[in-house]
Amino acid sequence: MKSYKFSDLYAMSSGISTKPEQAGHGAPFLSFKTVFNSHFLPDALTDLMATTKDEQAIYSIQEGDIFLTRTSETLNELGMSSVAVKDYPKATFSGFLKRVRPKQTDITYHKFMAFYLRSDLFRKTMTNNAIMTLRASLNEQIFSYLDLLLPPFEEQKKIGDLLFSIHEKIELNNRIIAELEQMAKTLYDYWFVQFDFPDANEKPYKSSGGKMLYNEILKREIPEGWEVKGFSFFDIYQSQTISEKEMINDGEYFVFGANGIVGKYDKYNHEESEIVVTCRGNSCGNILRTIPKSWITGNAMVIKSTSTEMHSEFIFQMLHWAGLSKIITGSGQPQITRTNIETLKFILPSSSVLIHFSDKIKSVVDRKYIIFQQNQQLAALRDWLLPMLMNGQVTVNDSGASYEADALIAATPQKAHITAEPLNIPANKKAFAKQVLAGKIVAIFIADPNFTEIKFQKVQFLAEHLIEADLNLNYYYQAAGPYDNRFMHTIYDDFRKQKWFDCKDKQFIPMENQGKIEEYYLGYFAPAQSRLSTLFEILNQLTEAETEIIATLYAVWNNRIIEARQTTDEELIADFYKWSDRKQRYSIAQIESGLQFLKMNQIQPRGFGQLLKRAKSKK
Image 1 (spheres, rainbow, N blue to C red):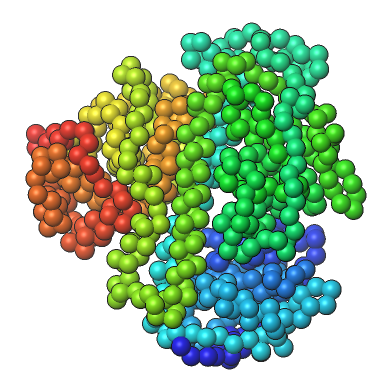
Image 2 (image 1 turned 90 degrees about the vertical axis):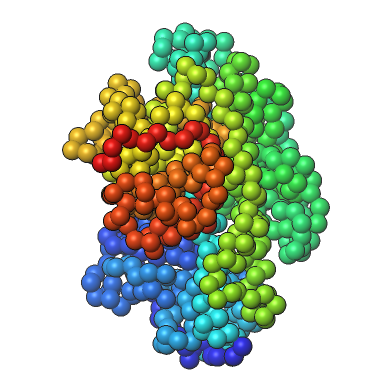
């Protein structure tokens, strides 16, 4: 370990001063919020700012740049960092940020610095040197006082790459959670906004002519048998508030308040997950789902159902349509009171529809919580590893890969990746379920420039086998890998009949009923949603050739398991080359990389299905 002056290794620059009329159009722009919320800059900067070429040159963003928040209301939020892992052409950064650009290439490693600068060790250095007047502020004088205690460059690379792999897993999980949330929202919209919940014949109610009755309170039609209720229907209350001083940094339980998770505590006041509405301050009206065993303060209002038939996710989604913004009062301190919230109205569906919705949505909510727990474990692992690696109590081996895999697997509940939950799809629905899965794949991959017919078929094969779904399996050997000829020759016409997609010049074109895919998908594949989302996320990054290699390796591996034959990497590679003459175009290194990909991402077969049929002749 060696001590350096931060200012000796990096050059500090201020950000661009802009006017309101420049915002919302132009070139990519890095905001204070983006830096504050993440160790690394996102892949794309969604904020825009109209800037000139000269400004883009002066306030540029390059790989290795570190951005620090320049000002804050509190010391502990000052100098929060985010690191660029690539160049951002034409992008500029906010005047509320400081950019520090490396003056050297062999003393600091940017991925390591991302974690080091957010560690307790450096954060204490920052707060001890910061200036606090009306607001905390970071300037070049303070920058010159800051010290860095760093391990050798090669050690930083090992540590940084390991921690970055954990960070990427967390980000992947966050994207899966976002997709699960979107699925829940889509299902609610179909059922309770468009009123196309399944009728007695499993057809969309309103679209199929279900009876609608005019409601005098809402001044519009609602399904027959449904009612309009006030919020007094719910059990609404606020719990005891605890002060920031009472919270404990290493407490066991999360505290939820006006700004979501606001700290930790050594006690909890709610055993189960609850739906809350923040009711104080600038975040007033935000709707949150807490995690089990949390302390909920009086700055968040708990809203519970008085009916056992109503799943809490119904309340969560309904609140987004309830008009909370209309009942916020208070100019200096925005607030929502129980008196005001009880004036709101909502549509109460029939008991049978509520029960059906609960059955559909439970697996989505449960899966989201499992992934949230994974992220908590991964974040704890990341934060524990950094000091242990820096002081030598834990070491990374020369390759880094084996330890990385062990660390990630140890932090991730295996059930979510290995155990295939039964889907229970009736035999007469399997063909349609297969179409739905294919429609979901197209919807996800439609913008992927590598999404060819070959990649489409291989993703379909991997998806069916990973979740162990027997959707009239009919795969056999084809030059480019496992292939279901009957399915691939009918799916395009099936898409057109359902009005999901048209296909012209090998490009899919969305049609008017594409939105229906999501509801069907949730109905058939909700128990497997997390595993499929993970699979699609990682395959979306691959080329056609890489997907072909992976699917073929999976197929020969699965065949060996079915036949109870010995399985080694060498034998799998040999089987791969025996598949067809086409496979000779791929190098040993590419095949080994494919095997490593399957293992690292836990896409490993278990002998599901039947032996693939071999074509009569090679193609």
